[in-house]
Length: 299
Ligand code: ATP
Image (cartoon, rainbow, N blue to C red):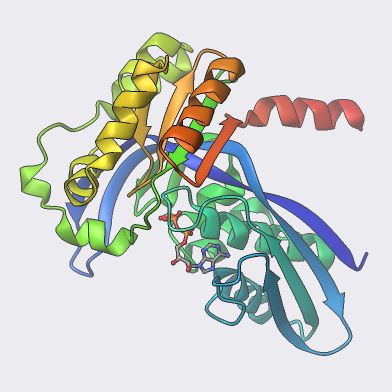
């Protein structure tokens, strides 16, 4: 096998809490992460000449060692002591710098893909260990599904899959740097922390009503202060029938959970045509159990 094609799926946060700050500047988090079906497509090909080459469909996104997939590939080849040439083509659909872990997911796909391409047989756990050195969200993007993430995001407890849900993503036409949001956050001033443990219990009993009405993200207040339109998008989503709406990660993407694909699509038209948002996507939650069941069946 000389080429492999992978789906690098994005994520949303159903909860995001910051519970402490380490001396090295990293924050201790507790968050419930959910993989979504919106994905970038990563194609990795072995080449005759040694080195890592990158291409992608966005003119302004780095195509050199600043692309996170370069770091992932370099790390993998170094750890495995492999001298080879690879070409990585990235077709981006996940909005960039948007709170959807697009870059982390691309990096995760590269680690998983190279493991298959070079037959190195690393376990998922070993790949996740490699991944955390590239970015805190990379291990979750390797694990996928629904999980409680603690530590800096790398201590993962898998949770039962959510029932399939229709998700609308609407990103204001701005980019937000994760670092600037954490810098502006004062942990002592957080007014309301999400009830993470109760939320985990709600997932276990598949209580959609609780899940849609008790989402919480302590970074929302910080990012909304910088960009008040995030609050407007949240309110518009609810007016248009969302069961719940929240900012994902450090933002600025707002997501809404809708009762049907039809209602999510109608709301998407509003955000695109009436509000002029350029990055609006209707997607759904990724159900890992369903996919693994299908694989077993196929075998
Ligand atoms: P997170 O939710 O993990 O904070 P994000 O959605 O906020 O992620 P990304 O889309 O991962 O952010 O991008 C963050 C930065 O990484 C951008 O400024 C971008 O230029 C850079 N970057 C490097 N490689 C990639 C890539 N393959 N895809 C997206 N961004 C990349």
